[in-house]
Length: 193
Image (cartoon, rainbow, N blue to C red):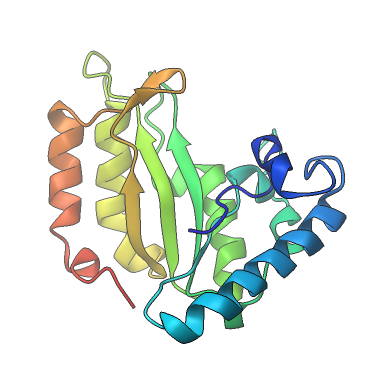
């Protein structure tokens, strides 16, 4: 996961321009940097797995409409093995599921056009057992039931099991149980190319 979320302001130090102001110029610089690192590393370490992982706002605008900003940064499938992004359910009350989350469905639809396996490079949901349809439990349960049938290109996830970024994403209770059950599913049994 080289230079994750390369389209975000906190990555401006990588470029001569702010990637949020001039994504075309920043994207060209990013592509050149990625390909340069790949050209050096791949011959001596051919087993490195390359995860192209733009921030989710490269796939979604603030109103959750699809964006194609990620294309400005895409180094090309000849230089990557996976497409990833970060998709969280940050609501303490929403029974949002993976298939009803525009931030995921927009990402998946666009990432699938690259024709490579898809990784959720970061994901998580706030646990709130005090509400009907605990967000964390529903989030991971929906992944468990939907990935193999509706989203077969998803081959792995990285869970943010932390209390940070304005929410408590630690796995607990029914959410933890749903995660464990999901991880035991056949489509998650092999995680590398």
